[in-house]
Length: 148
Ligand SMILES: Cc1cc2nc3c(=O)[nH]c(=O)nc-3n(C[C@H](O)[C@H](O)[C@H](O)COP(=O)(O)O)c2cc1C
Picture 1 (cartoon, rainbow, N blue to C red):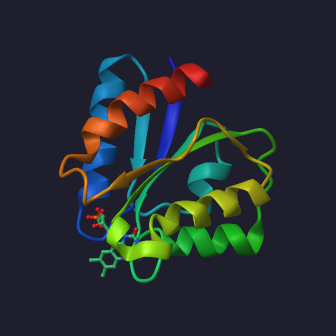
Picture 2: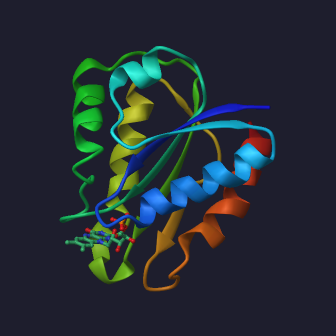
Picture 3: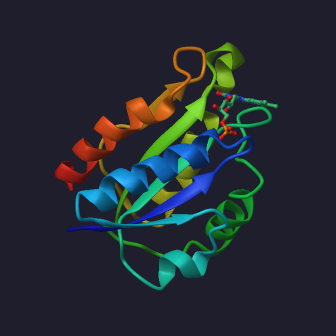
């Protein structure tokens, strides 16, 4: 059984719905998942649980407003998390071109700066390709857990 903390960034609710679907599935598998809709640094520094970023992309490759304070605090304070496992699921839309899934790259860079350890490849879910992001996220997250 694994304790997992999901850092959610969502404007219109798709990434949040995806995070909730992940929690439902993994809790049923016997894991313990916390969905953080307005995460603070305390939510991660008070424990050593693996972190799963589940965010959409807004603006021009930017991080949604509910996750932005966490991102900025992380960049500014860089609380060191050596070897802490993390994974990234990012929702985007390939019609945005160069900024496609940009929020995931920003979160990844910030977590790397804390010396956290990425597990698995980033899962980038394209809104042009699927209306049901959880269908891609659930198989990915099960592999992510086994890879840890
Ligand atoms: C105003 C706006 C800006 C967006 N900017 C980007 C972007 O720069 N890159 C990208 O990949 N997707 C972008 N998207 C697409 C969203 O990330 C995508 O629709 C996602 O599924 C929304 O998830 P959410 O409901 O959790 O916010 C944008 C969408 C909107 C409405």
